[in-house]
Length: 169
Image 1 (tube, helix red, strand yellow):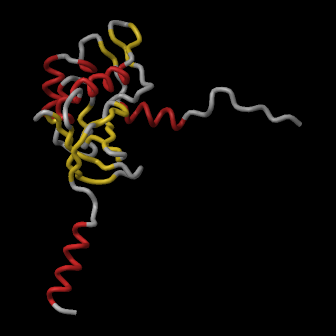
Image 2 (cartoon, one colour; image 1 turned 45 degrees about the horizontal axis):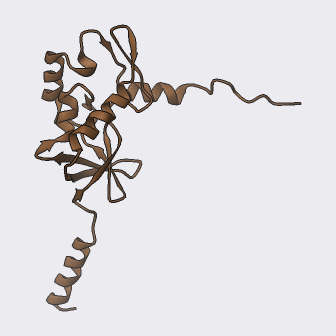
Image 3 (cartoon, one colour; image 1 turned 180 degrees about the horizontal axis):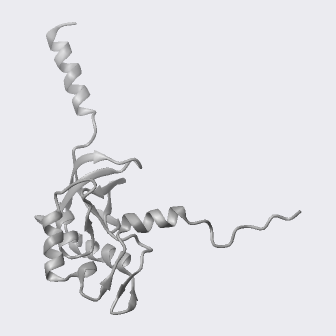
């Protein structure tokens, strides 16, 4: 094989690798997951309340997971979204830093108090979480009670079904 052929093969291998950045219209799946062109993007370094998760605010139920998704929807409305891949998670989603209109969506969600900095994976958004705590926004509001999403998910996986099927004998 000639040097030219080897370089051509290497170039083709690089071009056929994973997508490093995707730009386009995005759909919000939840407070920390977007879909662009059929690919799911998990926002790197953050964890938002799950869609079905309820929190408390002022002593009342608060649909914090739905509010997080709605806030992310508002951040991208009418904008082209760009997601730069950092990794892949165990579910096959692309873990990425995404932006719209010059706004880092990952940071904006944490700063709005609608996601936690996911310190188990990254410290990139720790300062944004401090800002949210100081400002008392979202899950950090003085009257809010919110279980971190990772704990909420773990509890749901560990619980047996509410009404197990009866076995007839």
